[in-house]
View 1: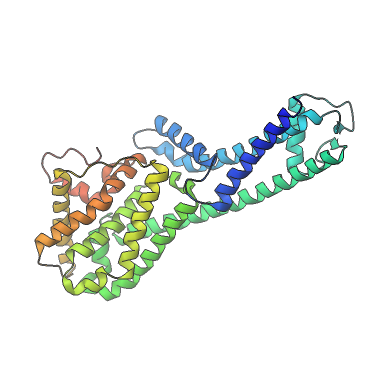
View 2 (view 1 turned 90 degrees about the vertical axis):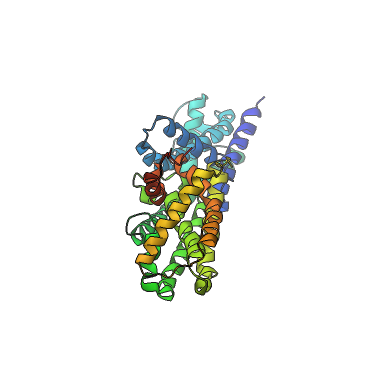
Length: 369
């Protein structure tokens, strides 16, 4: 019976250290043991009590970080206390007075030894207890160093993501419309001139995708301003690729097959897959119906007019253009809808272009079902 507490304490500390390793060092989406479940629990708790606009969810990301650091610290101290408790009064004593043997004292000794050896009047008397104190100190300082580094990396990645979202918002003239973004990149049919900006955008989108794969906690950093929403920015990027590949003429084939366009398409779809797998747990997406296809046709008509106003050449094969746009749009639109809804954003905040098309479409019922 004397060994039950040390065995349980060792197992608990091993669990925490494994979670720290998987969250901070291994850094892959969906691999955390404690961190992943804790993040989801905090998110769903705030989601239930937040308003329709989800403003309370704005503190979710920082709150998850604090909760995770507290959970790691408390569980490590609890595990160490389970190991220390049977040794109080024998291998671990109080140098100033009689040694208490209650569990609260064990928790105090364990917490002290995790921070720095000799931080209290309790000290090890046996060789095994001295090694325990030394090991606790190494574990405590290592976890603190790793978590500080982790925090710096998270907020660095968050800053880069927000900068990218703001850049996409600004390139679309703050409209959230991919046609406006393309109109500014390729004005007066200068496709080559806009390609450099498109290449930069592709690289930043790929970097942001990998940041979310390394630090899945970024999923839970939600801002009140919709232009910081991942679903909105990736919708604009993927819609831009869909328009390039379906609306531009054959002499722009080099652009349609270019590395930048391919990179935006691939990294965009990969991030949506990652978000669906980790954040939404592979939930089924809504089926594409006739109303969706009608709205996409109206959306393409509006986009063609905007591009034509910017003196960008367009394909004359309208049947092929509509068919291609429908096929491309069906690849990502359901995922964007589901993710935007899960993040408590209004449909019009995420897809401004479709929202505008819906206003002129009779018998519309809202695109989030």
